[in-house]
Image (cartoon, rainbow, N blue to C red; front, side):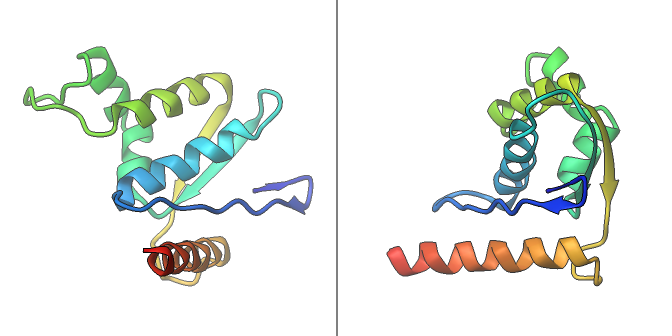
Length: 124
């Protein structure tokens, strides 16, 4: 997170999860750290997160009782619900960036994620 030129690093991980849950968790945890409503640029390499917010997929899933257009269950409704609520509190612009393409913050996040995964692997 960068605010007024100051950077705050958040990282973490979970065993037995998916990359999509971790991508959603990262967005949720970052937005939860904001103490007051803000205008935010959420930079992500996750099309799941980016499209879920920008294309309104998650809002549609919620409106249909967490069902996709084909009637199948939407995945991760707990995290999507939290993220949608946080997006209502803040003005969130989603910026999708290609992963592993040299974006400095994306590369840093990837390194942090790999380190957390290594720590979890060592504990098991």
